[in-house]
Length: 340
Ligand SMILES: [Fe+2]
Image (cartoon, rainbow, N blue to C red; front, side, top):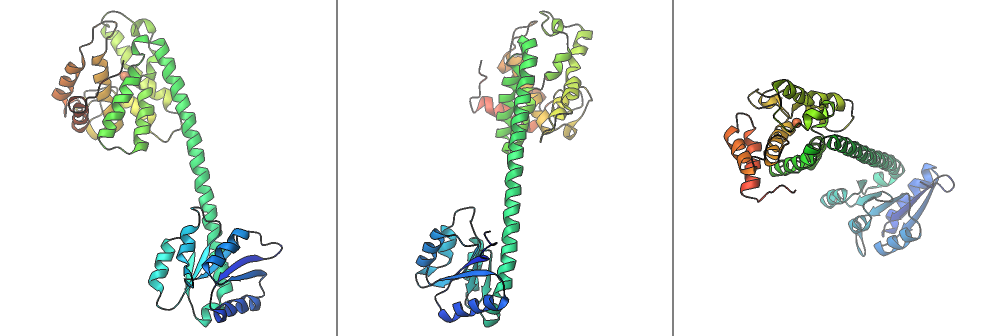
């Protein structure tokens, strides 16, 4: 607000000279430092605003060449100054519309209302500045969140490349698992921000394999029970790696839970049903389907059809029924296929 030198600049848009005079007198009597200009029509209002935006406009609702509400709708989204409306008695309904259109406040014309206009304007300006501050704070928060999200995305990318570089047989597994998981979540109507978290978790759900010796990960034969136990530790190790990563999503917990099963037969904690995050229940299905669709060092790929049969057969027991249904629908009705 350029109020230091010349005071608050007020543009009064009023075609009734008596009303304009009453408002002018109120400001003169108040002793406040203001510069008050009067426009008698919408056209004149636009000309004056184009020459110099005021700190606030006080507008009569009903002007010779239109309604003040038109001035509100012609203001850009982030309004450069507030507009205070004056209405005649009985015009309140229109005033409500004007408030919805973005007027800062409205007063019903009367000699009392004219007399207290300086205080009304002061209050409107205070409210306006608070509103601007809040908008600025919201914008800053949004930008901070975007930067944080970009930083997390980059971190996740590096982590996922690290695990895939060590384990060529899993190269692409996390990527394809994630694409299917996202599609399932979309099919289930998840909001975009939840899908974003699932995508992040999916891309690194096997990060804990970093702690499994590569001879075991790349062993071209069936694993011994002891070796298998070592591989199973990857869920917990993944949790430990990720638990300090600050993010808007429960990434560490999703990774921790991606081998849990609905009936409690999974690992590492034997969680059941709703104890398992829905993101982890989705990953459980997409992980299983992708793994069965792919070759492993120790076995050929059972194939997608076998994977879907397994999901169908074990839905409600090992896999969440809704997740299983969404997955089956994607493959059987919507033509989902894994890319190479
Ligand atoms: Fe895994």
